[in-house]
Length: 292
Ligand SMILES: C[S@@+](CC[C@H](N)C(=O)[O-])C[C@H]1O[C@@H](n2cnc3c(N)ncnc32)[C@H](O)[C@@H]1O
Image (cartoon, rainbow, N blue to C red):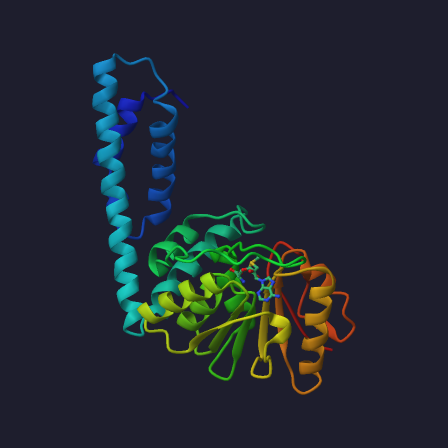
């Protein structure tokens, strides 16, 4: 492939109409990554200082324009969610991303991609306004499930209005919120950090999500009796995980439940004799288990 100067690349991007189409989010995200790199690390050529300043201004203007197109897209999906029509809009993106991932790119693991940018722009969860309390030993720090795995989990569990999903260690709450937007299920998040619970509640309220609730507290002391599907993105380990698995086993003795996991806790949970995996499992993708 022939080398193209940054000026040529910028001129092409300035004229590329398709990049301005709302659903070209993935392409815009790739372009914005490249421009951000030039913004931070400099433009890879030896330009006259005055030419370089002009080019920098054009890069800046392009970033502002492309980010504003993304912002309008996020806002229109937010409006649909607020009026109860978010499922169709979000699932369209989930299906498109699923097709991309089938082509063999980053479907596994905990990397983030343009779908996470979309979810972050749509949910607009605030930063915590109060200090974090801090975690006890064996509690795992907050890290959100990558959006593609949330959609995968929603598809694999086929949640419906008879289900109650409980996210054990829900952080800022995007799993219960997305599951409630995309399905008819009632969704509950249980989270130790009060600051995160406060942010999650504010966000759910701003989106009119009346099937989502957040409970602040230690999962080991929570009431799990309503749950039909439990989600764990490795929220704790060691004896804490053992204690919660014993609680789930007690729930499973009273009814059929499903447990969906992601990350290293999957390997521990797969050893439980009272559970059987639905299909094959691996730790880098959501796995589903049900009572044996
Ligand atoms: C890896 S994050 C997962 C966040 C969220 N489930 C998601 O997938 O986006 C683990 C979360 O579990 C919370 N946590 C850890 N131990 C907990 C416990 N015993 N009770 C409630 N929350 C806990 C942490 O504060 C953290 O927010």
